Amino acid sequence: MDQSEKGAPPKAEDQAALDEQLRDAAWADDVARAGRLIRRGADVNAKDDSEQSAYLVATSEGHLDLLRLTLRHGADVDDLDSWNGTGLIRAAERGHANVAGALLQTGIDRDHVNRIGYQAIHEAVWLGENTPSYETTVRVLAAGGAELGRTSPSAGLTPLEMARERGFDRLERILQTMTTAKLPADPDAALLDAASRGDADAVALALRAGADIEVRDGNRRTALLLAATFDRIEAARVLVAMGADPDALDDRHDTPWLVTGVTGSVAMLEVLLPVHPDLTITNRFGGLSPIPASERGHVDYLERVVQTDVDLDHVNDLGWTALLEAIILGDGGEAHQAVVRILLEAGVDRTIADKDGLTPMQHAESRGYDEIAALLRG
Image (tube, rainbow, N blue to C red; front, top):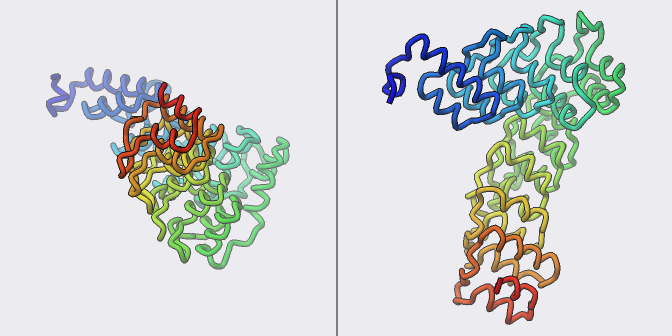
């Protein structure tokens, strides 16, 4: 164990080496290694000759988990890069909406102007692309209260004019809405309504107007849970980036994550995974998301969810695993055959029996599901 691991401050030369290693880990998005180096005394704000620090690297490269690590260990959110730009400007330029949202929640200067005369919103448009990631980034900046109408002193254009000049019709439409629409008088109600309808622009406007992102409807559903329930992907992207809770429970004991097992939405799953939903929360039947997905034959969802850390052998209150549910409540057809195949290839325990002691094989045979029985014999 070296001196820094014992708790004593590292020597100057050791500190420089630790800081360099941390920056290397940041470029590689090696969060585990970065964490070890920080515990040994590496400084998340230490810069190299090009004014790069682990914190600033996280912002420009879109490394959300790394960003959160640096924030927990004293990252200076007001630190500037070699272009006199903030981490928010760097994230906006690259279209990293989740990173931009996380930074906005820290209280970072939303409207800082860098050395070449751009704010974050300018960089998202002028140096960005007409793609979904930049659409979300622009909405997130609007939701977070960024100034939207200032003319860049270098380009001589507002963000809206930049979008028009570049032929970015989708960004132009978003900015037109953000700069001309009236803010809602009841932001909370507007947020819930917008999330249900999937109006991502209206979600951003409601948040800009001060809506509580965790406001509940009469069934204790949050905006994110409503977006997940109705598979409103673009609205969910804005909500997730702005810090909506993926584990918020409603009165039916559903969360945004659990609902994806019912809808089978791989797109929504991908929106939620970067913010690490709790995969152990159970629904009102005591089940995890793969169980209803297996019952419903959501093949694409199962192919993706088995790659997560969710417990595929979890037993719900009925005494059924995902494998049992696919057989007992499935129809034995191609979709449920595919589900069984995916679960078996993922290594589920095919011997877990139900409360009556009946195994998946016995259920398949009793129902005449010959193809599934063959898969179980394996």
